[in-house]
Image 1 (cartoon, one colour):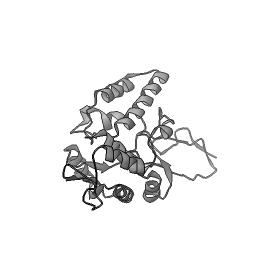
Image 2 (cartoon, rainbow, N blue to C red):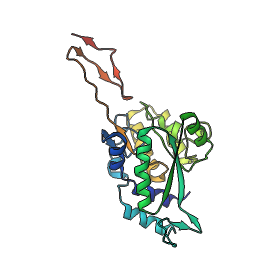
Image 3 (cartoon, rainbow, N blue to C red):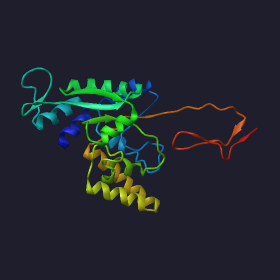
Length: 237
């Protein structure tokens, strides 16, 4: 519940190492909840978001009152160890990523355990707020994915797993999905991406890259932002 602590954890994650472990580096480090292929992705997030800086993470945690007073390598505050669990599907990409993050957190005195289950159990237990953290992913073409992940109406029965109930974020999401003007909508989603970063409930990790190979006989095939090929206007020589 402490913003400074969540921000510290953002600085603690070595996203490049996560990318290498999860997908053998075939992708790009993510700094926004939107993929670079999606409409209204703001490229400025790469400079705006926190960079890997474990010293900065430790500084923020110390300022928030966390210290390793007993020398066991784990921070504590008011007699409580900084230890929590992350829950996820038993997918190799996710568990590999989680192991890197687990090591990153250990370096700053934070203990994160890893729990896995099949998807229905993961979603159900995250909806019930049974876990402090999770590793998850999505494939989606529209920036309105923000509604599913962050709007307060999605707490308990949707995908708002952090149980974020933030009036400003709710307003940005509703305004974004109701705005038709392209320039105005882009400004809203830019602000939204910055604000999601600022409240630090999410640590974007990576966006995978996919490569498809075609025979030269196929012409005019195109890509959908969800990652699949569109053949509607394609023709074969």
